[in-house]
Length: 316
Ligand SMILES: N[C@@H](CCC(=O)N[C@@H](CS)C(=O)NCC(=O)O)C(=O)O
Image 1 (tube, helix red, strand yellow):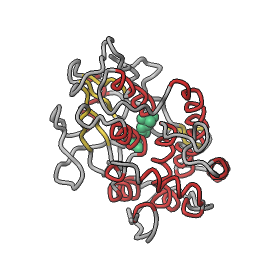
Image 2 (spheres, rainbow, N blue to C red):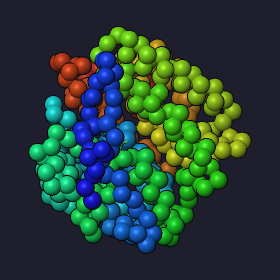
Image 3 (tube, rainbow, N blue to C red):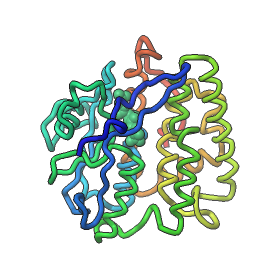
Image 4 (cartoon, rainbow, N blue to C red):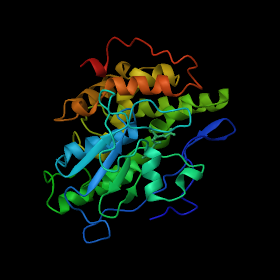
């Protein structure tokens, strides 16, 4: 269950000529019917942060696939310390203890799955999918975790819907790919840029893609599929970034050419997603806002949390 040397390595900030480069995730096993990690009820557990767009994907997918009674979860404190480490703090509203392993920090979970983790220079990220049976991390890459949740439907668990029907899989993957570097990771590349040119490039690419998506959503409800489209993983992956945009990224990551509220189709898309059953309950505005402005002291020295915006997805 150990990550390979190639896969391993801290996610965080490897900078190449002032550009933020995201490291790849370390644990890449898969839930598969009849496999080492079989799709079974009450066997798997998610560790998430409500602040994190990547972790948010997994909670929304869990809800939309009706897996609430099959996959449990714990929530870290919104405060990420200066080393980039997450901790458990049940006294914080919306956060929990580690109810499975009793650890005080996420690093403890990683150490359990990979002995020597704490001595390595790696830093544990959320989301984490934990297997109670093998007492290890199955996977810590959001895109793969949401895809493997489909296996539960195949095992007759959940509400028998699919967010990645086979006939749309290619289109879904192409859409997720097209939005990943430009938008999902693009906001981080903008915010963590250490040169003007790296920032300029990230922001220009980000808004060029948002313009395209605004156009793409003309007359459509969802990103992929015939006609108005149908709800898929691609929508979830875009949504968790867009819903944080006006609240955080415009100011904190300097993504300020426009706001999402200035794009009628993107704003309508965000609202459509929030109105899906159960999705609003996965949005924890305080965790989102407080986390970014407090945790990245390198770009917000005095940890001042802005009061606004007065209106946006979070006030709906
Ligand atoms: N590729 C990962 C990225 C996960 C990730 O970077 N999560 C962030 C929170 S938004 C994290 O835990 N970072 C730890 C740190 O900043 O040290 C995924 O999509 O699951």
